[in-house]
Length: 223
Ligand SMILES: Nc1ncnc2c1ncn2[C@@H]1O[C@H](COP(=O)(O)OP(=O)(O)OP(=O)(O)O)[C@@H](O)[C@H]1O
Ligand SMILES: [Mg+2]
Image (cartoon, rainbow, N blue to C red; front, side):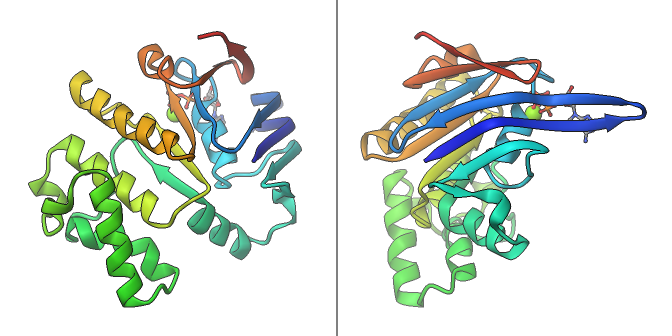
């Protein structure tokens, strides 16, 4: 599903070249639950941006579902991000003026899904995260954990091939963070592919595979 072959991301710093990712090889199969863990500055966000097709490699190749990303136009990449990848962020990234249901519906509107189908999907996605009774609430009327559940429902509604989460529990207390991890476990059990990027070893240890990132290099860790 995800295949990185010798991927580097290089920033030019004056005369110097800085490798934020250094010849990274990574293979993630469909249905795997993988964490990528590392300290600040190790290259996590760089990695997330590459996997999420928000940024391109300077060296090497990225294949998503067997397709080399470099062959896609900007427009096609936007479509891949919208259809194939469910993004979940540390700060939820919900629109404050929209209700939970409207936030969840947003990507479906972009996909021009019919209204009836949209409603059905939104209800289903909110049901999955046990928030059907909060459909009409705005983000400010929800707790942090509930907001993150809405964000997961929004990702879920598009039925993405991959859930890609950047510090999904970073803004939450530890108990609420565990509830969010329970939802990822539930999604994993249903056959979804999940990649969580975090600096938190406790969060990383809950995945099926743990990969350490340090100075732009990856190593697999036994858990
Ligand atoms: N646009 C850029 N230009 C130059 N260097 C950059 C740029 N973006 C990131 N870097 C460098 O690349 C390295 C990796 O950055 P990255 O943002 O991926 O780290 P991170 O692991 O996500 O850190 P954090 O946990 O603090 O978010 C850092 O040393 C950073 O300074
Ligand atoms: Mg980061």
